[in-house]
Image (cartoon, rainbow, N blue to C red; front, side, top):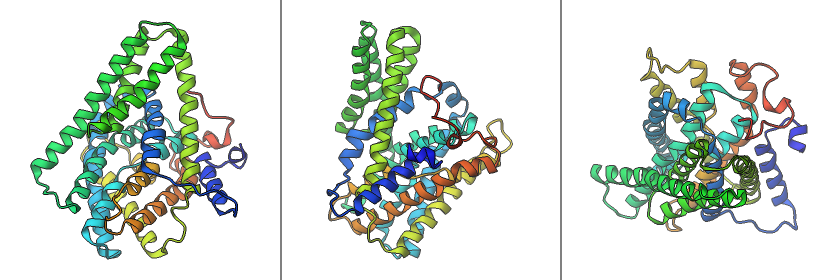
Length: 388
């Protein structure tokens, strides 16, 4: 509420509150872990975003989104790793791991910030879809980087097999869970049972895929899109659809709030060295620009051409957040420079939240993506899930 009155993105307000809370002498120690983020908080955020994803618009721009979520992630990761190796003097193992975990934009931060700014149209479709899908590519790259440090041989065949298994298997797993639960939901008109089944789909798809070594992120997204598609065809009762939308709007808000509050309260960034942090922020921004402009150049003079102002928004809107921190926290204790990777990851996330996040609405207004006075921070509460 205070963030709204101060016209701040509530994500930035919550991180600031968490940082202030952690500085209090009587504050309990809060430990942010990979399992907490991935197992408890990420599934509802991904599922809520997936059930409101405009699939028709995604289909129209699927080649652009797919390019940004695959080739763009690779370009960004390679440039980031090279920059950290040359400028921060990190060994290649640590640089490649950091490049992989920070390459993908964070769906939690991106969706929260752009919805706050009342972004709409093609830009919202591109930035939201890319942030959801590029985690699959980044997770494969991260797994290969960690495996290489552990002494595993990595060949082109291994990369292709891992990509097909994690991405393809994750999507298939999520689709099967989504279809199965929606068929069960069609046998009842009890809205509480229907809400429960959607919850099972969100968490069940993620946990099952993760247990099988597949992409839990893509599994949850596939489950959400499958359920949303069939819900619109009457598989969920009319009362159930209203209840499900309200429930997931609230669940995503709570998970979002807890994620940003814990980022601040965890204290992962306390005592960091300023030079590696500044280098990391700079190389991540440069790599994001190189990835966006080069990928969009492939569609120059085609029907899928991306306007330059939207490319600029995609570059500045490439926020990092809880997913990057979770991957950094999940590194083995013996991994080279683990503490430094955690520190610079927190620095990049803090820059995303406080600098990019706070300037996103003015930036979008400046480039003409949202008319003056329409950004969410100058209006009353954001649109509801039903309105979306």
